[in-house]
Structure formats: structure tokens, C-alpha cells
Image 1 (cartoon, rainbow, N blue to C red):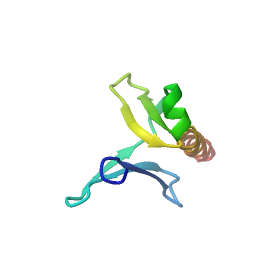
Image 2: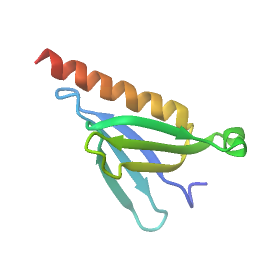
Image 3: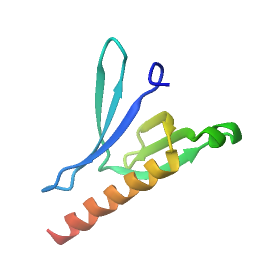
Image 4: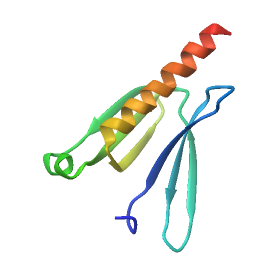
Length: 99
């Protein structure tokens, strides 16, 4: 599956609590996209029954401005990824409220 899939890595800056999603892909060529998710307000997971059986699905992130957002296709354990993203956004907002 590494030949055709993306890897999604959630990173959170220890000082600013700024969450970013790294999207890595490629086998022979390397591609890296960094997505800032601090403006995300809606997350959605979509799995067909057979995708749930093998543990993949799509995670959709929608922004506050109503932009296109980001769709993370065929993410491994999408429910876990979505929960971690929501947790990182919550921590950022809690940290911002403390300032």
C-alpha cells in the first residue's frame, strides 16, 4: 500500500500549539505538503463498509471561511486521525484563550 498511498502525520508545535498536517507521498519521487489546520471547524469521516473492514477511509476538513478545505483520501484508521486532529485544534483554541 505504500506504493499508492499518502502518509498523514499530525504535528503540534510545543510552544505555540499550532497544529499542522504533513502529507507525504511518493516512492521514487518525494512529495511533502504541509497543511495548517488551525482554522478547521468541521471534520467528517467517510468510510464505505468495505473500507471500514480494512481500516481506511476519507477525512474531510472544512475551514471557518467556508473554503474548499482538505480531503485526506484513503487515510489509515481515519476515525483515530480525525479524533487526533480535533484534539489538536481544541488544544490550540484552549491555549489561545489563555493568552
